[in-house]
Image 1 (spheres, rainbow, N blue to C red):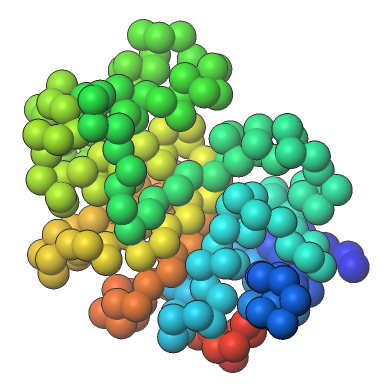
Image 2: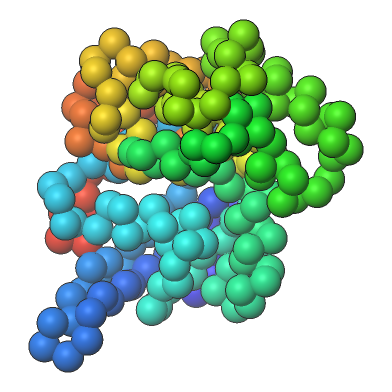
Amino acid sequence: MSQPTATPELALSCGGVHRYLGTGEGRVHVLRGVDFAAERGKVYAIVGPSGCGKSTLLYLLGLLDRADQGELWIGGQPMSPANDLTRTAIRCEHIGFVFQFHFLLPEFTALENVMMPMRKLARLSPDHMEARAQQLLADVGLGDKSKRLATQLSGGEQQRVAIARSLANAPSIVLADEPTGNLDQKNSAHVFDLLCTLARENGQAVVLVTHNSDIAQRCDVIRPMRDGLFL
């Protein structure tokens, strides 16, 4: 299968993706030949009922899982033949994640949590890492709380730290799985606005899974999903 026509803005694409989960009689055909592409600077919402394959697709796009069949490209580079070491390196450099649960390490400060992806990539000096983390926290309105432990922040603040962390390595793709699912309406709107504003300013593709219809309607592209396929 050939890659869709390349454009400079295309951050990721996949074609003919199938994924099965389980074994034997319990085996489920979760994704049934999915095609998807995301351009830089745009925000995509994947919506649909629980169990339709939304999160499964997101994990495949984020190189956290492998498809049983089909092709995936990140920035034009084929991922299907890539070994685990290469996929880990691509994920670290090109993909940022925001999940429903922020997954901050409670024993570290907000600043240290944001610096962790940069430490793993190891491209910046310690001083530059700290300066970038501080700027990202300022961008999400937490510049004055960078030295607070994660446990000393509210739920909305913790999720904002998670957004800053997802942008730490300036990824071309941000994947978000129900990023506002545990927040009240005010914080949900604020977190969504921050995620989209920062990503658009940096020319990143944002792909989010959400059940929040208000948030989905504010995205550039809505892709409804049902029974393992886009409608």
